Structures are given as C-alpha cells and as structure tokens.
Image (cartoon, rainbow, N blue to C red; front, top):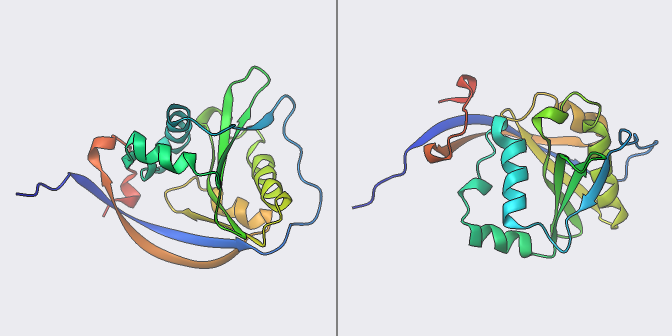
Length: 190
C-alpha cells in the first residue's frame, strides 16, 4: 500500500523574467566591507543547505530541501552550477546567488537571496547587480530568473528595476511536505 506524505498545498503566482542584454549604467557598489566569493571548487552539501535554509526559511524554499544529500551533491557537482556568497568583513554570510549554465548560452539565476539579518541594509540591489554582471561577464546570450508570491515582496520590483522584463506569470500549486517544518503564510494556503 502507498502512503502519501503529508503536505500543505499552497498556491503561488510565478513570474518568469528575462534579460537579453547587459544593463547599462553603473553597477551599485557593494556596501563597505562586503565581498562576494564563488565557492570553489564547489559548494559542499552542508554549506549549501545552511545558506539555502537560512535565506529561504521565510519564503517557502522547499524544492532543494526534498533532495537527498546524494541528489544535492550531484547538482552541486555539475560544473555548470556555481554558488556565490556575500560575506561581511568578519566573514559572516549575508546572502548568496546561484548561476545555472545548463541551458547555455542562457544563464539562469536559479536562486538569489539575503539572510534575514542582511535585509534592509542596502545590499539587495548591489548583490543582484553583482550576479547580473557575473553572468554577462561569461558571455551569455540571455539571463533568466523567476520569482513568486511566496518570495520577499521586493523581489519582483527589484528584478524589474535591474532590467529584467516580465515574460509571463502563471499560477502554480505546490505540495510542500510537512516534514520540512516550513512556516506557510496563510495567504498562500489552499
């Protein structure tokens, strides 16, 4: 007999965005003392889980949490995936982004976010523009990203302001496993 895993069903509006050329203008500087490091040769499973969980805890980031360590290790071991971490002068993590080149010459900004304590400190747009610059410096033909109504409310306006254009918005229903213990906002519950 098959026993279904207990889940909480949520509904989100997912907006898909694309950038077809490098944005003009000066890139905002990272705040004083902040630097961005590509995890080389790659992010470890433990380090990635720590970042993903800290950034995504309040935004129902669940998909990568459902992967086994072996499955996540396989994703992170793909040389077309890179993880970049913003850190303060003391070496504390502030946020991260993940670039996915598996559909080259398009690069997907697969994940982007700040740890809760870094939100509202003037880092978000600077880190986003850092990610955009990193992708375009590789010679990509386009950069894509998506966001949803479970994400931080500034996510979509920031992508718009950074030069992405909206392609489409679709309603999706997600079965978020209860075992993950994620806080699910009432506005998203079905």
